[in-house]
Image (cartoon, rainbow, N blue to C red; front, top):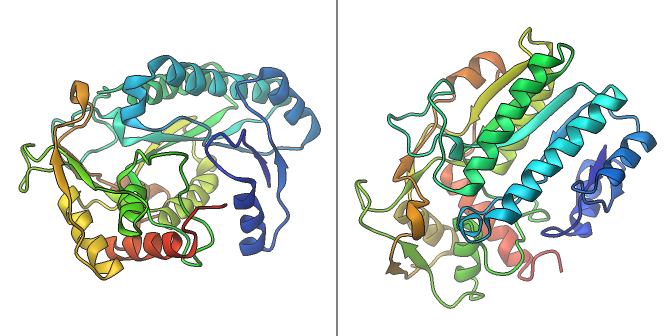
Length: 312
């Protein structure tokens, strides 16, 4: 396995722990794949059979504040990878897409054939890249791509050795709640309680990161499909509100978590509700999520308590 990462929001210690848990050696390059010369160098050095592209900026709120950074990083990195893959004859590509490609869904649960749209620059980059992959696959009949539309990844490895360790203030709900529960954050803010949902907070489909990892393994086996471009929802098919998460996390950490209600995030960046229909992945990839919301909270809490300062 070869990993390339610029470590802008990650740690080399994570690579070491992957080796420890898997018992396998990882070849690591501290490369920024927005640097085309480094991407070409990597493909020249290593024999690569397939690419899984995770390298993206991914925070909805931050993308509204820094749209140019998101367009530059997410689009250029993908174009560089595809160009080098074409030069070196690597024709299998798995892309980390997102449920944000559905914008504000007109019906629930969300199915892969629904129209695509977006509510923020982050979502826009995912829609654009899926179109790039579709066009590239059409022009190159030997190229096969799978776009995995993640819903909301949460949790950590059950060992407590690998988890989410974002720089600065977390943009995602789970790591923020975990840091608040541990005393690392002063307050827990809920962005809006006036959405058209049963309890007024946004509803999302949270999926355990280990289920997500198993989805990628399943997708690697799907390249035998006749289609050059495939898309799959990866979620649980169940929606949980922000208040549901706070309640479940309170159970995991053994105390009631207090919170404050704030305004919605700017520019209507959040859809009121989104959860997946994952029947296509079950049918074609023989994959389905197995882990519960309680497990996501328990594993996140274990990671947080055993690594209070992340990978440091």
